[in-house]
Image (spheres, rainbow, N blue to C red):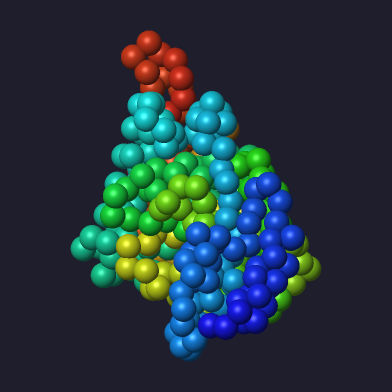
Length: 299
């Protein structure tokens, strides 16, 4: 690679970096520097450069803050919530990769939903993603598909960026452009992106189907956690239910009505593996205090 080509490449990198902020970067600098240091003019070299330049955002998650707010901890300390979600994720992973996976379509795509808003589905989706990211031989992709009321980035106290909607609208041509790396090595995130009046049609499109297929099959060790809207009264959720192999229905103890749960489950694909997480369950500690998160599954 001659000096002119290197200078042009650096200009392109600088232009990308000008669009970054404190939470997000648009190039993988160590990898970029390694590529620039190579003395090569091969097509492979050019393809590698283009891949690096097109790499999506890097998100810095404040792990200390999440720990303080009671989320699954990726730090060294041992917490009750880590143990609770460890038990929940084990069944999900078994369904995704074990014997049952052969009877499920996209067994490693898990939608997390609830019957009504405010029952803790995003909290559950984020915690599942954090817990699975601690696995030594699994990676996890957290997708915010609640395009009407996106909450994943809000929960992480980060700014919502271009994501799923931009991809479905054709403003981003590859999933790699909206897939964000994080400071948790095994965790990737796709944000909801901007709102759009045709969100139902976009989620029902062939492009969405192809995107889910790529998410499911590109990496053999990946679990995809999809935070979806509540099931009752939202058309988008029923559409997404046809793309996932597993569903986690979150219910809040002493608040969620049994009739709502029954109606919500009726919206799901009967061929899915369906599990239930009871959120804010009382009296889970020996001293009768605290909250609990329990998983019960059916197929």
